[in-house]
Image (cartoon, rainbow, N blue to C red; front, side):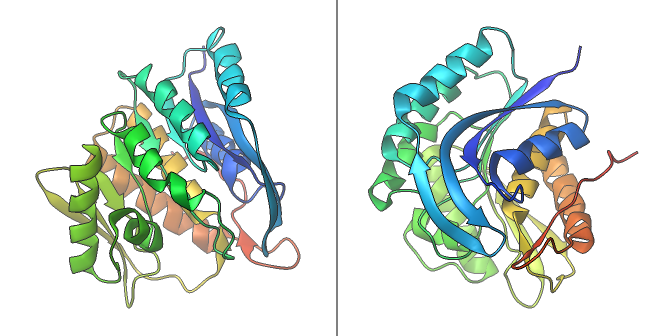
Amino acid sequence: MVRTLVTIAGHDPSGGAGAVMDTAVFRGLGFHGAAVLTAVTAQGPSGVRGLVALEPDFLWAQYRALVRDVRPVGIKVGMAATGANAAVIGRILGRHEGIPRVIDPVLRSSSGAALLEPAAISGLLDAVRGRASVLTPNLAEAGRLAGMKVDSLETMAEAARRLFDRTEVPCLVTGGHLRPEAVSLLFDGRRTRLFAKKKIRKDVHGTGCFFSAALLAFLAQGRSLPRACALATDLTAAAIRAAVGTGRGRAVIPGFRRPG
């Protein structure tokens, strides 16, 4: 029987991010992918044009219908969209303490559209406190969540420590936009680790979704958190190199074969 990973995320019609991307990554790494939707967006690779958040009761109904028949072996959280949805997500995470849970705190699209109500940021941190395996904010997200500017290894380390103190969850700040080298930083509450890759100068849609989905899959395979971070970093770099255009806007990551 194939094992199932679940993403709780928004729908991106372009397929370049959100639940569509997450489930594609899960399948590529040997799992079945299931999705519980928080919102539906109007967007293409060039940016978000609109967003409709689903009601929290319906978010809960989707989850309850799914777990009546399926026992997930890992959960990824992406865009919550609203504070009410974040509260429901916290309930869901609390019911699955024994499996990997990756939180990709999507706050804003790369085109600038808000994907979480500003007033809901504190509620999101409350919802995931002690209920996840790792947080994966990018530089901008780490800055907003930690209440500081994050633009260097030193500030990444401080933000990761602040977020760990706030949530009791290890924090990996992804540094794809760091200059001159792409370096991500993991703080697990005791130790700091760095994951560096040569910077790839390519504008690609959905890299954060791809990375966090791959990270969950590697954790569900039984890898340690540092090893899973390293593997997800390598796989994401390869996916960025393989990204292609589908029309106007940013490149997207195509399907990929499961690594041997």
